[in-house]
Image (cartoon, rainbow, N blue to C red; front, side, top):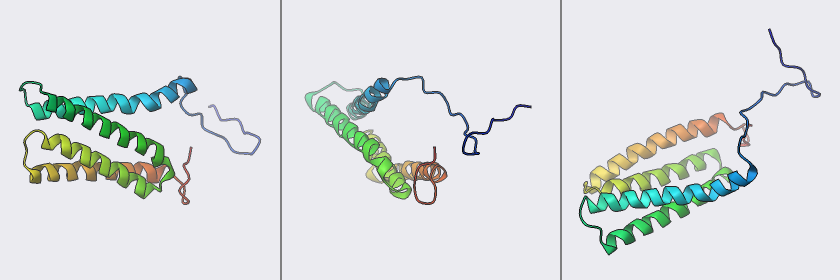
Length: 146
């Protein structure tokens, strides 16, 4: 049976998953992922609003504005999120996903009440999942555990 060799401090560290991408790739992805997801979101919003009809200038404007808003808020959450306490961090992502989903759902022609209820259900689920994730990966002072 294999055992981990002791280290200088008397404790052993578990080996994590290897990082196969370079630091440059991670820097590029930090900017590219919000842009790509924003473009997908904008296209999705425009397609929902169009409902199979012709593409118009207002439809294109809606798509680009939705893409820009989504990308900016997503990028801001990626930058500011790690500095927040776990409760606030989970609440920020909850609000972002609830609003983003609610807006997409409202573009399908659903009533405001149905869009709100669906958005709240998605937001509550996201909050529960992310709060659990952040709670189990931080110590009592709120520092991330590697």
